Image (tube, rainbow, N blue to C red; front, side, top):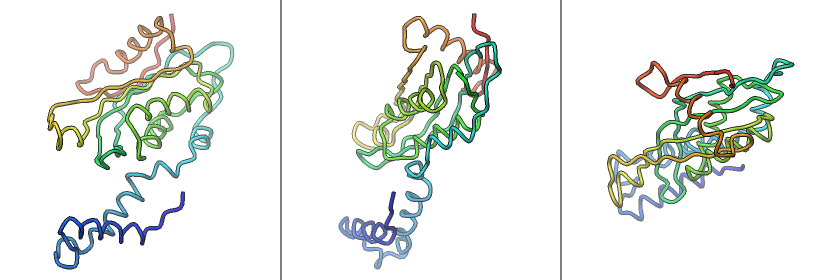
Length: 208
């Protein structure tokens, strides 16, 4: 995706000026257009430049033969995303449970996958759906589940100003699509979180 950083910086400067804050007249805003441009292009929206298929292929290995691997659960994955409605951040955590198919993914690859879809102009619900779709399509997972718990600045700092509100969403696919899979997903997440006061950890429980 082509980015015109100079044009972006000019636009941010014009935006501030239109709000009555001319960077040329406020010393603390002199470098703000460039800083905001760097923050968005190098960090907050860097996920748009990630080749998700290559990310998964580069972080996978062949699963052990003969037996089916049990569910792999990773919780406490830090999430930072930008809401496309108000360009304000949402912060929180994601959890993944997936049933490996022919390939196993490194734990770091799973966290990088979430980050790649989160650091975009995107809705929270789309992050989870994109993660499970990528696990099924590119990693050959038999089943995939992703849940997110985010605090949205657009809900907490403006509008309704619900300072304690947390938005929870989830997506699942493959063998995890049916209602019978809910207990297996919750069991895997519970084991991953056991023994920690924060939602962190990973687990590979055996399937019954």
